[in-house]
Length: 525
Ligand code: 01A
Ligand code: MG
Image (tube, rainbow, N blue to C red; front, side, top):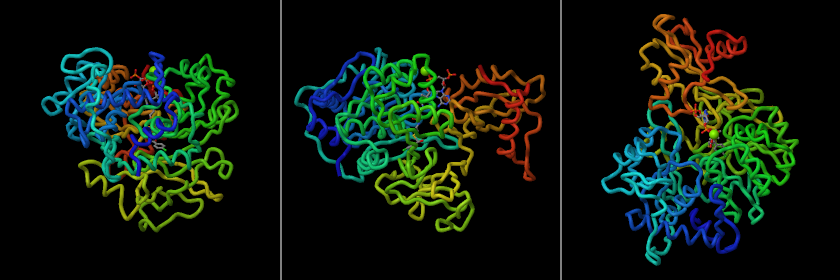
């Protein structure tokens, strides 16, 4: 087994003078040799401030140059980076730090964030900020150790925790997904066997996906470095700049959510010839709009492929075109998977052609997560009888392809982020003018799905406007991206005999209301 750090280090041995990382803000370019020197210096700085093998250190940053270096420095120490979504509110980030026994943090230069997080860390734990100087934190630029103070790298056990990623739950804090060193190596390898990425210096990767999700982290960042490629950092997703970069730097490799592809092709400076260098364009996270797929398939130089996976398994399905249809999926090498009947007779109750079932994947493969940290019940619910239960429902086609049709729960996928209706509902229920609320996801060409809150007021007159409720959400602990993008004002929520709101009926009502331009359906500006 090779740990992630070793894979990058070996790449540096192979091609020391190849560019490894390019910063979009400073135009700074580090060769692999320079990268290793820089990472050692940072690791020595972190080590001098108490970070050691096994220390869990949170990062909550966009995909910046510093974020990349911070994670590599932590990997150099065999510390455990906990990669948090920078779009979460400070209280949620701080709550996760407490839950995960975090011993240090690298954060945005936001005084409220620094203060809230620092309050949850052990006394004296280091907090670094990227950007300006903040009271109570050290500027990350100053985190440098003495030359020669760093101990030689020590190989960890393959089962040891390498990273923590986070996946939102129905209510409460997101779950912390523990990924081992062994899983890391296999997730990188997987990008070659399934993703179709070949090792070599020809790889020029677009670094716009968040490092806090496994596509951005393994699928683009770590794989690019382990494979001797060049990682082009995009600190803020701006489609115009991305289109220019792809053209100017002749990028070869993209792995994005379709929302980003849509933004790129709609950018005013987009022309198909600017994408002629692209050899491989992978997408995942949400299903793609069929019209968008046609455009990128026709207009981009490379192979366009759909990759299905989850944080817990990384990957289990891919588009195996030309065997499959271009937009469908197939069981992928090497993870065994099957569709089983929902509420059926267990893992051997496999569906027939033309039927729908939940996708379960082999939980004994090397890419699988270890557990949800401090949450044996959740682990047991998702990982049982040797299988991992994805919660995704697929239709089994006659030709062997399978098509994603829905979820066993009500989880919404927006722009590649998972949002559970319950976590939005608990916030809206607290609003004093709202007496009943039910949140649904409806299809959307840009986001895949958008969050819509169906609300009932005490009286019609007492109910606030959509804008007022939106402002209330903004001031709450709910992350901004999870806020409803539309409200539907409804007197009678559809209920079943048990007096429970029937979410799927409500979703159909909302879809119809949107199509009919109903006066009760309000998009939030
Ligand atoms: O009202 P405002 O100002 O707050 O509105 C802002 C944001 O709140 C809002 N926003 C969103 C989302 C979202 N996902 N859904 C709904 N609303 N993101 C942002 O949009 C307004 C503009 O804000 P921004 O920060 O300038 O937005 P952008 O930078 O344009 O962000 C949009 C992106 C699509 C780029 C962003 O959401 C993003 O980076 N999404 C990618 C998420 C991701 O990495 N997903 C992968 C998950 S890994 C699990 C998985 O599915 C998988 C799949 C395959 C795992 C393994 C495999 Cl193999
Ligand atoms: Mg933006």
